[in-house]
Length: 112
Image (tube, rainbow, N blue to C red):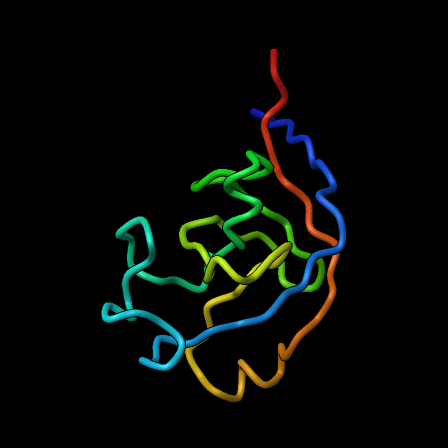
């Protein structure tokens, strides 16, 4: 059996919200992310401050308390700070998430 070791680095407690692919919440291409991928429930958007300061990068895997693992494949409006936005399909899912404050970890393979 092959085992894979992972290292989880606590980023802190971040604001977690959600968004849907509707014109009032996205740009003119609501089903495409900022890096040209299709939106997915396995992906998430992060605030641009986290990307710009090198805390995280597109493609990184995050573990979000209460929501599980998500890949970074999108970014949020520049005015939003220290936040993660989960893509959802329905308004009911969006309301259920609301605005929460959750611990978030960056998941990496250890350097060998």
